[in-house]
Image (tube, rainbow, N blue to C red; front, side, top):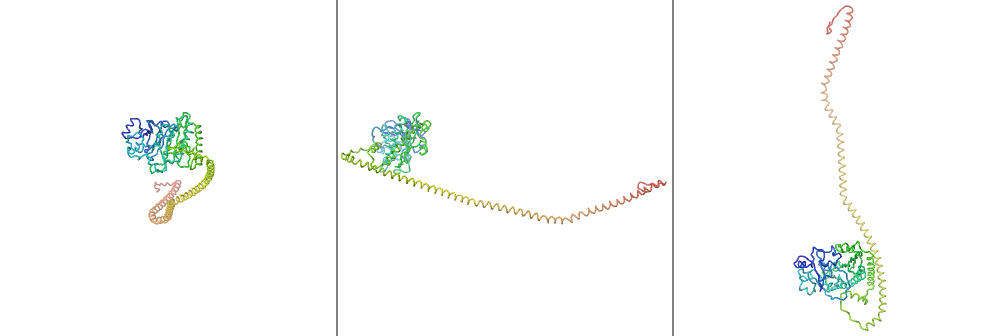
Length: 500
């Protein structure tokens, strides 16, 4: 009986399981006992959110693989497993549900059938997909970890937490791709496969089955080989469109395609020590797988060959076996086989020619459309630039007008200042004249006494000079006379005043 372990916190039951060592709390980054399915025991970083729950898928008391499940999209984000080996036989197809996703308080520790869970699980289907969600739809329950890759107790893979909606054709091609990659490329280049770590996941689209279960936009696979000295890491992407083939990508590029840009493997699976030669060999095989898928798609008919049908039926979930054909049918088939082969050959040639013609027309149309888009883009860019420039100019016009008005006002003020200065200078001449004329009588009347005084002083000085001259002359004459008289005997005396 397959079991699945769902990790949560906050209930007494969770506490009890934690004591048993079976539950991992949110504070722990790993999946507990299922950490061994991840490289270096470390799950991918950056993918876990509040709507994701961690499930350790168990069967018969042993861990089989790990799953990160989205309760919002109701599909797995990824499943992790190791060393896939083809199953020896068929498995009973019994799709199971996980009780503890919808009812955290449930005491059921094993995944059970949906019919049994209806009466024992509260709010069944509120957070996970059910078998009824796939009824009357165009989608199958596609396993991320296919039952055909599990070597033991395949019933553990038949859980709806390991499944996502896939069309039948896409499911067939996805399983064929997985087996081809595992058997021919990945496992042979990783020793015995014991050190091979596999992650298979989905990226949900906006479309949902019955408005509940998200249909994947594409599925992906990441492989990490941890062989010492010869490890490698590879990624693969396959879109759910029928015409797309599987694509090989580097793990770093794959991480960029996923939501939240996670890190799938710790240290990128020992990136510095990876063996490039093994990766080249893997890519060669991948190219062969891609060519085979292209050939199958080009040769696809409404009735595939029996060998292809048997190969696909071995990979799909087991169905009832077909009845044996009668002897007459075999005989008719033997006779009609050459004609059928000839018809198929002609059909393949016509289809190939038409496909190449359509591809050529598509390339020409694509080039024409690209040219038109480029012209329209350039025209649009030029138009936008023109209108932007015009808008900038229109926006700048008021500012420029204000600047011009300010300059005009400034010039007018300067002119007025110059005019006022000139008027002042012109008016200053008659004012001075008037002042001088007005002050002339004052200055004149004030100068008369001074002039009179000067005249009086001049006349006094003149009279004094005349007297001094006269007396000096007379004194000289008397001196002469006195000298003469002295000589002739007459004595004449004069006093100091000059009198006799």
